[in-house]
Image (cartoon, rainbow, N blue to C red; front, side, top):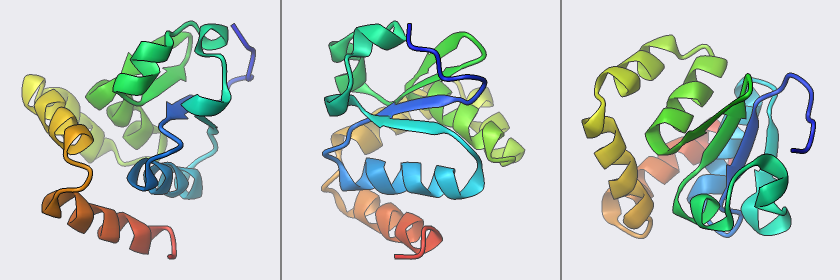
Length: 123
């Protein structure tokens, strides 16, 4: 596994504008190592290409998180503890929400969410 120090590692879809802007928002909040999955060998990070193509991956404290759990870790790292707690507490609902967003990137709801996030990163 590639060593990156104590910083959380975020592996995301570098071809997705929504994903890119979400990662930029996180980077404005806290220090992370952000890597587009298309530019790395996922095996170097203990994950597969298929896992990286299905969801965001966060490696933090020796643990690997996917999907909604990964987003909750990032929210915690950004000191958005309430959002992180709500996402974790929602269990399957949070994961279903993550899957919905991931599979409807061109849908109206995700486009609106993307506009909100873009404003948060100063675009």
